[in-house]
Image (cartoon, rainbow, N blue to C red; front, side, top):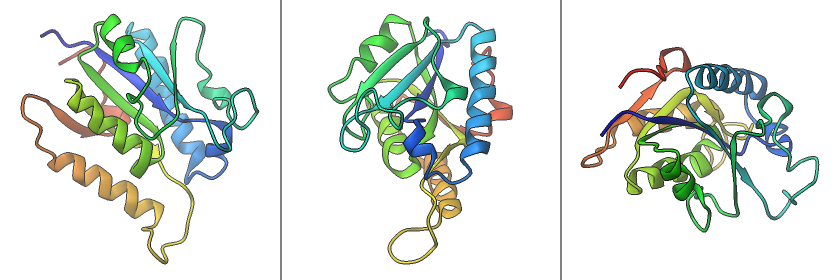
Length: 181
């Protein structure tokens, strides 16, 4: 099957960026990937959570200004950690001819992890952008790992995943090549 990537931008919303570890750096990485994807003719799909404190139409629900989708970009609204569950994400990706998703966004261990794993189950290859996902700011105490450890842990896990018939890669944004298989 031909190589046809799409960049997924998951939950990069104002309220979530406000509690994110290294928010400005992560937004900058994703913004750079968006520019490169668009220049290469690769679709960008923004996934936007709604529900609870992220009420549709509110300022906190909106995508951060640096990553606001353009009119020609797909936006998928979700109500769970899974970007595929009860959404049109799979239909959107299939309509675009996508075979591989390049995954970025918030939160590493929740929506990013769940959506990336579900992408594999939906027959997409996955690139997890090692420096393109983040989680909430928190101390390394109690039941949660520090943000640095959580991000490193998920990058390591995805490097070890074995999913028959699917290709999984973890690469820094600088090494994402939207033009080569």
